[in-house]
Every structure is written in C-alpha cells, then in structure tokens.
Amino acid sequence: MTEAIIAMFKPYKKVLHTITFDHGKEFSYHEKVAEALNVDTYFAHPYRSWERGLNENHNGLIRPRALGEQYLPKDKPLDKVTTKQVMDIRTRLNQRPRKLLGFKTPEEVYAKMKLAS
Image 1 (spheres, rainbow, N blue to C red):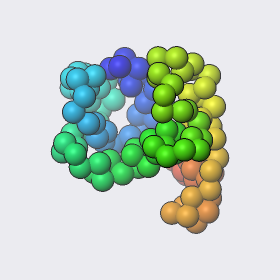
Image 2: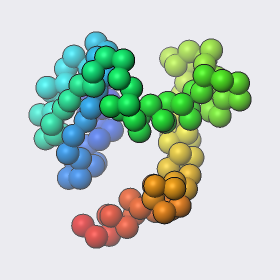
Image 3: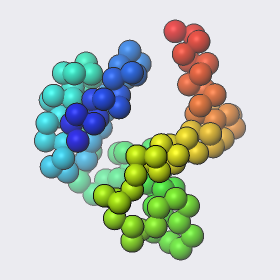
C-alpha cells in the first residue's frame, strides 16, 4: 500500500501538502509516504468519518450501502477489481460536475490549476 500511494501521488508532489489516513494497519508506514512525497500526514479520529469527508463521499459514490450501486456492488471483493476498473471509476468521478466547483468538473479545475503553475 505504501508503494502504491507513493507511486500514485508522486506526479502531484508539487501541489500535495497533506494526507489524512484512517487507522488501518495498511497505513503503518505513513512516515515513508510523508518523506517520499514531502507532505504532512494526519490520522482521523476513530468513528469520525466527517474528518475525511471527501473520501467518505467518494466511498459512498463508488460503493453505496443502499441498492443501486453506481460502480462496485458491496458484495464484490476489492481484490477482484481490476486496475482498469479503478481507472474508469476515477475518470467518471473526475468528469462529474460539482456544485462546490461552480458546476465545473474536478478535471476542468485541475487543468486550470496546472496552467496557472
């Protein structure tokens, strides 16, 4: 998990400042992530999902608890999800307009940020 996080965020190292983890043992090497990406790392308090609101919102979009799953049914084991499926979900979520962004997509906002830097 540590190497995957580093590889995934390395291209964004210049604009990444913090990462907030939950208390899963998969994040036990958080110091290595912090050093490799030059970021501060934090841990959310147990059972306070609002401290990681964006992450929890995306989890709900990807694997909702109610019927009508958008992308991955709750009963599908995550070790059966392919990299292509993950990338397709990421693309769809990043092309989804957001009220918070003035109904622009995260993709549009990020493209403008890249041009500005």
